[in-house]
Length: 114
Image 1 (cartoon, helix red, strand yellow):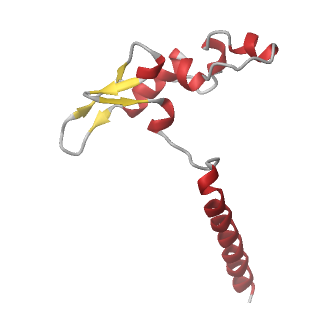
Image 2: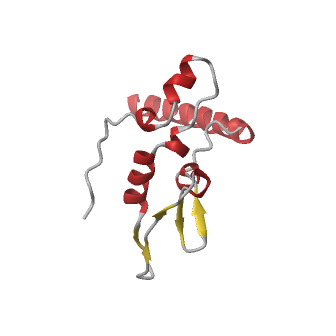
């Protein structure tokens, strides 16, 4: 049974010293690594039956570096769902794709008017 997930929960509130560090300009602890609630929610969301019938049941690790694990595989929050949108190497690719989409959407829009 899936437990309830509070979609309004602020993960900075259970990240140790997040706001104190932020207030004083220190490097803040990342909720992706330090929020126990976010870790639990990701464990619930991403544990599932695999196509081969085996259960991919993520376990909570004992340290932030051992975020979630399954068998011999360790997963960090960012490795479960990885977004490359801010990755320097991929910026030019995303810019190209964005321009391509805008260009073709505009053409499609104009073609539909004819």
